Length: 154
Image 1 (cartoon, rainbow, N blue to C red):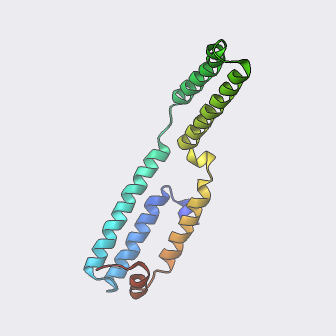
Image 2 (cartoon, rainbow, N blue to C red):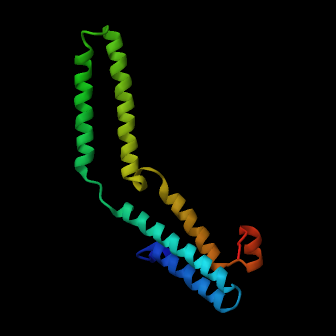
Image 3 (cartoon, rainbow, N blue to C red):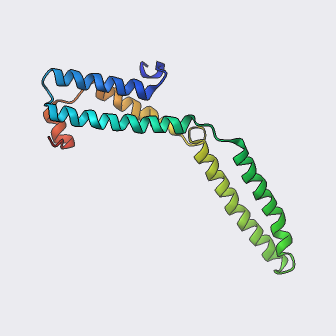
């Protein structure tokens, strides 16, 4: 619930993880070298999260989708005319249907790439990752257990 109320969830989780890491280091559970290594990895994670947030919040120009749809419509109208005198009518219908199916599929993939959170069920994945991070931050692993599970090299 705390994470859901934050303006920037990634930034809030990053700050919480850094606070926990600092507390563990101050208590003597992490040697300096391991603390530095984990802090470096957290900074890289923060950079990736910031990049993803910029991609997610960048608007997709509607002109791009409109242009693609218009050119695809023109192709679907012109293709049967272009094939009319070179192939039998049944072949013309088959080729037009096959090419239309392929291009409509490519257009649909483009829509999914442009708006992944509206089309693909990404919120469930994000919710699961959020719960995992919260569980980790509320119940941090002991250093020895972490070394055996994740093979931290110091």
